[in-house]
Amino acid sequence: MKIVIITGGSRGIGASAAKLCARSGMGVILTYNSNPAMADAVVAEIEADGGSAVAIKLDVADTSSFPAFRDAVSTALKATWDRSTFDGLVNNAGYGLFNPIVTVTEEEFDGLFAVHLKGPFFLTQALLPIMADGGHILNVASATSRVATAGVAPYASFKGGLQVLTRYMAKEFGARGIRANSIAPGPIRTDLGGGLGDEFEALLASQTALGRVGEPDDVGGAIANLLSDENQWVNAQSIEIAGGYII
Ligand SMILES: NC(=O)c1ccc[n+]([C@@H]2O[C@H](COP(=O)([O-])OP(=O)(O)OC[C@H]3O[C@@H](n4cnc5c(N)ncnc54)[C@H](OP(=O)(O)O)[C@@H]3O)[C@@H](O)[C@H]2O)c1
Image (cartoon, rainbow, N blue to C red; front, side, top):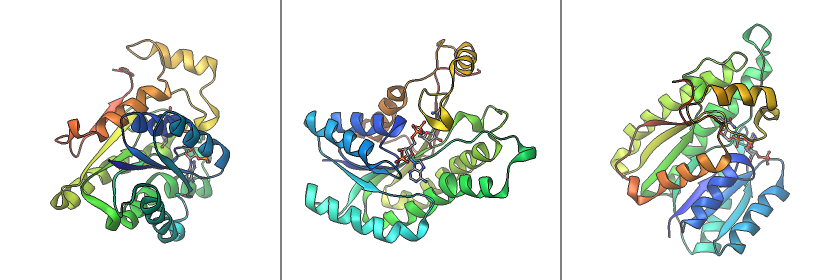
């Protein structure tokens, strides 16, 4: 059985990915930061559906916690699946913040950097020793790295950095058969940044070839699919999952 770790798996895209990975036969370790109840609900739903999942707390901004997180992952792998390694890492956790460049504070900039670029970098580094050869790293970036959207400059810049980092991961980990890809979702209806709101959602839908914004399952399904063996020759790519957003 393939075991995958999904950061920020308690809500939104991550929760959908957790459920759809489990449905396709993978064991899932999902993380939450502030809301254990939502993570427990996702685990319960997966178990009710016949799958296996474990929820572990992780603040992606707190690199000092990563060794303890790796230990917690090892304990869960052994206890739940009798394994010492896992196969897939989805760096998905994140948050949104709207503020134009002229008013962004250094604190806001550093917070976004910690979660969207530094965290995935060092979390991947911390978990590599217990990732199986032939594994897969999937980094969740954003279509905002292609389409300049006023108010999200630091976020989009770090997502762009994550796409570059992905190619370096593919280069440096390829010798172990580990591939690395990133996905770039377009606007998806989640609570990110306080949600889209009706007016903005209508505008984004009108800018999308398929005529609507995305739902979490639109991205969760793609994540589950990319993690499957059927995609093992897809490597070092950034794949936009956006229904044809501003094309
Ligand atoms: N929604 C979109 O339109 C969109 C578009 C492009 C890319 N994305 C990206 O997709 C990913 C998922 O976003 P989403 O829309 O599903 O967001 P969401 O519904 O707000 O869920 C965010 C998830 O990340 C977790 N999280 C937040 N801050 C964290 C931290 N410091 N450490 C660890 N976990 C943290 C949350 O955990 P708790 O609830 O426990 O705090 C939650 O599970 C993000 O990387 C986002 O940038 C989203």
